[in-house]
Length: 246
Ligand SMILES: NC(=O)c1ccc[n+]([C@@H]2O[C@H](COP(=O)([O-])OP(=O)(O)OC[C@H]3O[C@@H](n4cnc5c(N)ncnc54)[C@H](OP(=O)(O)O)[C@@H]3O)[C@@H](O)[C@H]2O)c1
Image (tube, rainbow, N blue to C red; front, side):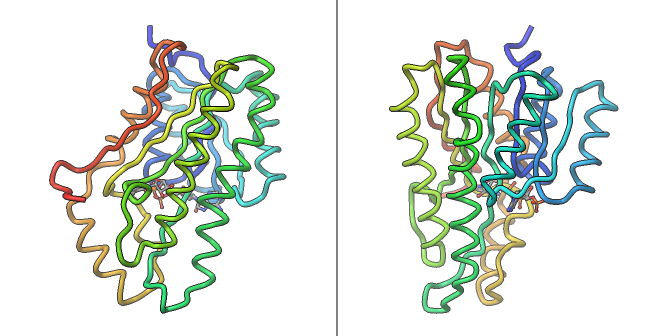
């Protein structure tokens, strides 16, 4: 039997892409899922799909930029399933642009979702994990959390921050038996490029993404990190398309 059988996993950004694929993968291995995102129709459809396959899933419409809503999400998981074993801080967006274009609204959104959303997620579940002396927090960084390209200054900044926060979390909580994992994908097929508002930049990224791999590739890596015995922590993984250079 998989170590994933019966564990309770909260996934943010479960309404598409990597979050949705991770939900399906973990449900197929017996996890009890708490799906979160803003688009309710998508969450409802995914819940039905998982349930039709014999899996267990509940959902709560949640905006990760609200610390209050993230607290409510954790409470919902506890009320419905009695515990939280894993949080996957996956919600994110990537409206890349060149700095001189001053797309300040996009910068703020990335900082709010990609950094503050991760922090609010950690804040919401950590007290319960510390109390149980058990837990696992998985944060989605990116290859852009390792390398910076023109146009990705702010996005990369947020993804470097995710890696710093995850490593800080590891140093603070390993003694409480709480595992921390950083997942850094390369180009993955999802709705991510749709968040780009810079009309000069969008076609460049769309062309690049022709070589993207399926979201299931990342879902399998997430499952691998979770299903290790509790004394084994997969702290960091980079998963690229074989043909991606940087
Ligand atoms: N695809 C890639 O090539 C790639 C590469 C490296 C890293 N990543 C990272 O992987 C993660 C998942 O991205 P993806 O590729 O699967 O993209 P995606 O298909 O666009 O999914 C992003 C998810 O984030 C959710 N989201 C956005 N803003 C939110 C908010 N304020 N509150 C709650 N949920 C919010 C969206 O749901 P709603 O709109 O319904 O709220 C959606 O479910 C992101 O952190 C991304 O940076 C992706």
